[in-house]
Image 1: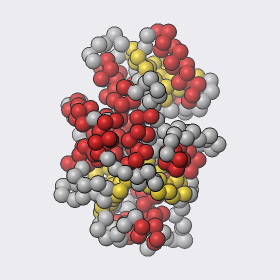
Image 2 (image 1 turned 120 degrees about the horizontal axis):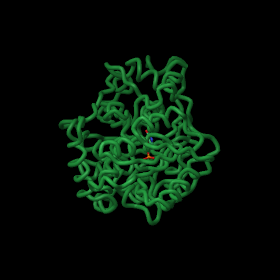
Image 3 (image 1 turned 60 degrees about the horizontal axis):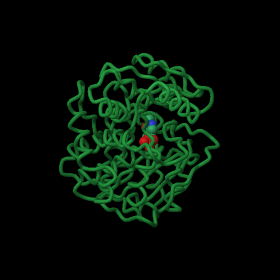
Amino acid sequence: MTILSNGHQWKYSEFTYNKNYSFNKKNILKSLSSNEIDNAYKSISKWEGYIPTPLILLNKLSKELNLKNIFYKDEHKRFDLKSFKALGGAYAVEKITKGNRDIVVSTATAGNHGRSVAWGAKRLGLKCKIFISEFVSDARGEAMSKLGADVIKVKGNYEKSLIECIRQSTENNWQIVQDVAWKDYMVIPKFTMAGYTVMMKEIADQINNEKISHIILQAGVGGMAGAMVAGVARYLKNLPEIIVVEPDSAACVMESIKTGKIEKIDIKRESLMGGMSCGEVSLVPWEILKNSIKHCISLPDDDIAKTMKLLGNASFSDEKIIAGENSAPGVISLITICEDEKLKESLKLNKDSNILLIGCEGDTDQAMYQKLINQ
Ligand SMILES: Cc1ncc(COP(=O)(O)O)c(C=O)c1O
């Protein structure tokens, strides 16, 4: 080992196997149908500026870990928004407004989802109201104002901003575009997930005749992971082993997988992996994830900055990759699993394996990105 060792120990916190594992394509596509998935691709692929994001080979890393290929889907290049989130909120805005320009859309957000909704509203010439908590950085707020949205800062945390968003939206008849589902609110979060599946359509087209053997998916409320699993069911001919990764301070999918029902986590420390710091898995993704993911892994923040730096200075690939905090955990999970020989063997990670990692964002917060890679 050359790039990886250097006296550095790569760490995971916990690893679990899903005892309820039984991948069932039909059931998955009941939660997010082939029709919904196909419609999203049909619409989004016609948007101005649409180009599939690159699938980069981490060839130096695969050599070092003795794996066949590591594919890294680089969402840094997604439209101008530098994150896969661009596919979700903006698509939901398009679907619910159906060309009606008088509709005002609203959302509560920690950043990237709101940016997508604001961008989607701008594309269609709609008014947009974004609610952020007092903990969302000014830079993230400004990014949404620049897209023409009214940004409303609310005292308290994300939950408070959502309550205020629901209150004002009900009063003013604004259409809420949230990425998280709850009991009577499923249609719009499903649209956001349908939008995310575009990534898997592109990947299926990009891998030529290779078969993906393993996929590692980051999860916050599980929308992205659920969408990618639905994408596997829709687009891939074979069935890869699917692993979900989360911050150890907010492993809500892992805890729910352990008991077989949705468990709420009390987040005591906010992870650096900001978009993934979520206390409860969302309903629609849970229906997909509960039987279809095989393993869960949780990580501390320790290796995030180092991994961003190694991706950024082309240590893992021939080209430099700008990867944000939420892009690093897939890479870290793979390295730390491979450094544990027993685990590597039990997951059948070997010289025939093709692993898919999702580089879900680039430097969406530039100041934070610079700070971390210069550490
Ligand atoms: C920027 C960003 N936000 C959020 C998430 C989590 O997505 P979700 O809440 O849909 O699970 C990720 C990655 O998993 C991410 O990269």
